[in-house]
Image (cartoon, rainbow, N blue to C red; front, side, top):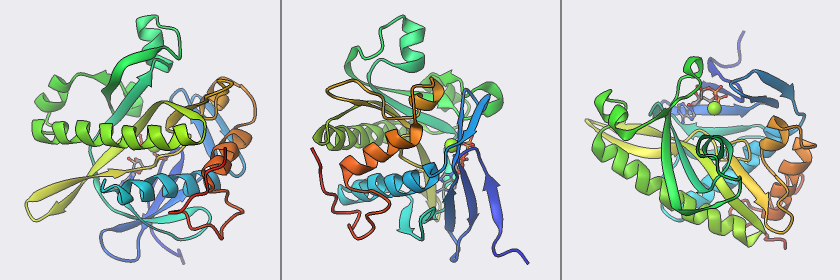
Length: 254
Ligand SMILES: Nc1ncnc2c1ncn2[C@@H]1O[C@H](COP(=O)(O)OP(=O)(O)OP(=O)(O)O)[C@@H](O)[C@H]1O
Ligand SMILES: [Mg+2]
């Protein structure tokens, strides 16, 4: 007999039905994919690290009043989350040019942007998650104008906090992606941060050396992905082996 119902299996995570209505169990896999899953591998231990790191970031967001789906860590690979209706957008915040933006505009990676820039891509793997203007989002009803305004201000608050935390451990937050979901309360939807925040969904560069500590290590064959993520976890004081540290009180290591 199945222990519980699997609701969705994605590239990096599995969602199971949670113990209470409105909750899910999010399982972090070791699978790494890039370029819309054209490149694949299994990186032993990645799921454990991302479970802990996403918990760390989401707990920090809760502490500064940014609502998100994290409820509780269940074990090394699983966390209990609030079920949301995912807004079908990848919300990307950029502080420095990199990746597709650098390519599109012919900019050198690492160039500081005049201010943080928020952009959206439409979540559709078969289309390769295309970049979309706000007009499309409103016109096609993926989010309302009010929701979009709230998403932008939420994303910028996440960026401010994350940039500061990473700066404190000698890491530049180049860019990141978040997903936002709706929690319905009667006829009203509240927006909360969902999915995950981890080195899979951020670009993180060591401030001194410029060494990449994120999924680009895998995308571009720059070395050992697990070592890179372990370094991020170590600096933030959330090493998976160091379970005695409460994740809400990280030890900053210089
Ligand atoms: N709190 C939540 N409630 C409901 N769905 C969620 C929640 N958090 C994340 N999700 C969704 O769960 C899935 C997580 O799996 P994963 O990230 O592996 O998917 P993926 O392969 O990236 O595919 P997708 O294109 O659907 O994001 C994603 O579809 C994500 O949008
Ligand atoms: Mg995903």
